[in-house]
Length: 368
Image (cartoon, rainbow, N blue to C red; front, side):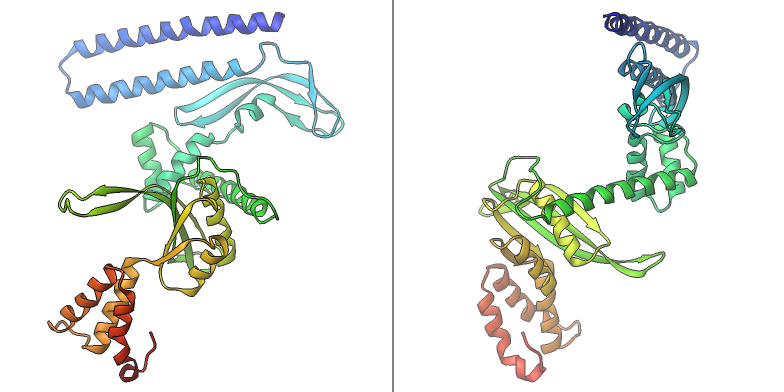
């Protein structure tokens, strides 16, 4: 009862504390903006800086509310024994709102010497490290910038948080390793008989799975293929420029990518499809290039899917045939020859295209 009452008192004190701070902030800003004429850009920057500081104070006041008002004298230890309370100790973690220092109870088991801080485990922080939210922001910036140093520069400009590139790289790699381990665990579960990942959303009436790859040069392995997969739904709509036709547009797209062998990646893509609700009851369409490995994986995990060669790759084959038969030049003869077959291919008349190419098989010495 005492702890509950104390916890209620802390929660009730939190609101006026933050209200007073917001009032002081508003007063400071109003005086500052009236002191002299300032451009909007300068006012924007000042407001962002002060709101950033306010957010840090809000976070610092909120997180302790998740801990008991009076720490327990002892907690269970991982070794099976009891860990006794040492004292309240500070922990500093860097978040998207800046450096955050918390006072929390630390416990120690004399027999095994292990230390633990229940609040750290509860809110998922590690003293001296970056928060998971900041790691995710760094990972996103790292994926869009050419170098980690550029990512940290953008972070400082947008979030007003300074992280050295070396530390940022380590945080990104740690997050990547964690995500990879989670993915591997999901794949391992999915490979077990009679199990499949739980769907996060309701099963769509139609779903599409795609697979592609690109060569990347890795530091240790040289050139390797990074495999990418996409799961999406579609939406039909009347084309604005051609009202007499209906277009199909992909939406709600989610992706998986990995430097992995084909079999492992096939399970990863299937796991993502299951998460998206693509099941045996869903009408599934598969898109990819003409590689046999892609079709084999699709047939294994999506045996009822309608497999379609992606238009980009299919049209490439037609243009290659035109270059071989008519000539690999820029003459006008090659274009109408290819356009005729491309129109037939677009209309779904694959047999007509094959029939048109059949007479040239002997002269070119190539199969279909």
